[in-house]
Image 1 (spheres, helix red, strand yellow):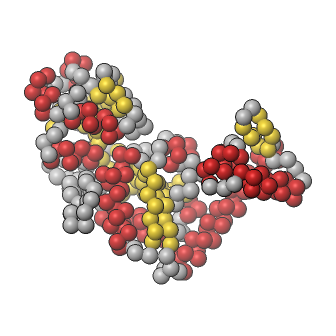
Image 2 (image 1 turned 180 degrees about the horizontal axis):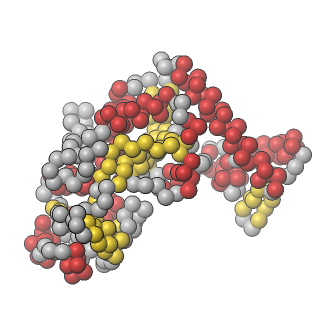
Image 3 (image 1 turned 90 degrees about the horizontal axis):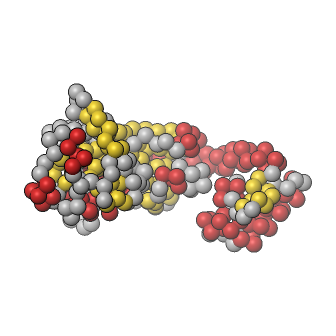
Length: 315
């Protein structure tokens, strides 16, 4: 299954820390036991044969059965050290999930926590190896359709700029005025070049185009803080900059529609006690984490979701 997912012995060996020769030997042994060739080379990739394609869904069922069995045993050994691999995206990692993972680890000292920052395609890939995912928005990857999703909060996005930029260029009065401003465009998964805005009575979709663009949320925010133009961000992603007066809302009455914050996990892992514990923890503790407590003496700053002007609706 790993070779099929990776498309080559070399990539499967690299991704899973195995020796290529060992994987090749295991594949030959499996093909010998089954009496059928499972892969054939097409260009630079290994493609499953008809026998390999027929075997794949059963191989996945075997692996899922092993994971379910492990989950059952894990539930019986609560005092034994366990491991939980959590996947999330870049805009959630430091601002939201870092602080939550730290607190979850303090409440569950017998759990080893591994927090992986991944792109959406890797986050939902069957071969990612994560136990659960923490995600902002509605996932569009087809692999996410086979996962159980539980909403623990929601957020909105809006326009922001540095006070110095607005002092020079002025404040736009309507979304249509954005065409006369410098825009910093985020081309990552979560940052669409289509900025959807609504004031409760009218909705517009602005096709953003600017001199500066990036596929990284942090780089985009840095450029906006440095006065390079107006950017479009989730409220939680710029809360620290708002408190420091490094950024201010632009067209504050206009926001995106609410998007969910989700915990997702494979449907067959529903009995895993660690996933259950994390889901309960996030649902009960999350109230708008916005900064990472770098020192134990720091208290995570929180922005209540229903605070006037926060722009984020109550969960």
